[in-house]
Amino acid sequence: MRKKICLGFLCSFFLISFLVSGAVFAADVIILKSGRTITGKILSRSDKTLEVEMTVGKSTATITIQVSDIDRIEKGENKDVEFRKRWSALKSNDLPGHEALLKWCEDNSLSIQAAQVRKKIDSVKLVLLKEKYPDLWCRPCEASGKLSCQGCEGKGVKVDPCQRCAGSGEIGCRACSRKKQGSLDCRRCGGAGVYERFDPAKGRKVKTRCSTCSGKGKIECPTCSGKQKSKCEDCKGEGGNKVSCVTCDGARHSYCKLCEGSGVKGNPEKKPVPKPGETRGKSGEEDKAGEKPKKKPVIKKNPFG
Image (cartoon, rainbow, N blue to C red; front, side):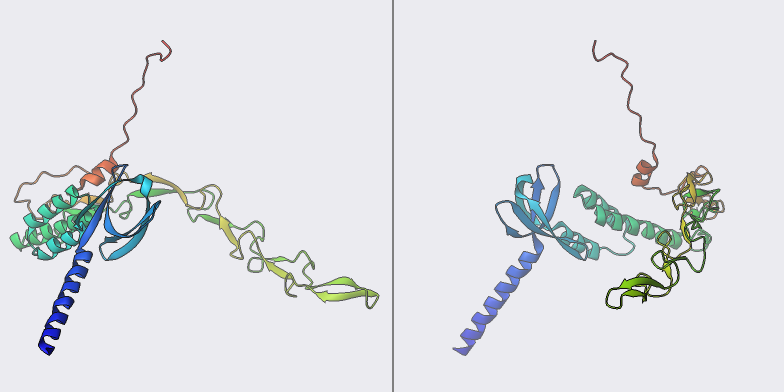
């Protein structure tokens, strides 16, 4: 009898564990009318709103969606969980596997995971390149073919210093004129720390401690908060006008001349040499960000006929 009870208890325990694990790995795919897709676990639902628990990486967040914005709800597997399985199954030097995982992430609109895989692909390529050319890989650029731009110190922009604040973004406070550590005379007591008031009980004027300055006679400058400096009005505290770096054309990097941007001395694989200001291995998103916005065509036809 005891064996049957124990066996039934174990069966129910494993069944509950299976259902719980299924609840964790199963996810609902919510498709909005705008075309956006949200994958997560539905926690609660009312006539107007829907609470969904989303998991991105190691972070979990709960969002509220209006029912009127939902087109349909489909049951499916959590893509983030599937990504973790594929990610953990990959070997550190498996370049084709990482590239296939990147394409899968892009097909499933997993932008955060795709950025993680893309960063890993760059490191895998460097490792494979160093293994292929153990004695020739370029040490100054760490086989990346890129060096931080010396013209802008890797910032991509240069700052034309403001003539008024000399690039500091701050000027001396005019209100306190840097006197006595950014303090001003108290207006209520005139800097005395006490003031006279009429006391009806005594029938005469008496000296009273100033409550505004606590008897000190000085108050903190309200303009600079006692810092003796205020934000420059000409450059609005930025120190000057930011202009794109001419050396790297805003790319923050320049190609390594020692390895000709290939990462290997002598460029044995005969990779094309990048142009000045151009960096090798630039992603498509960076290319789009660097492109100038296209101007809208001018319609010369009279709309009124």
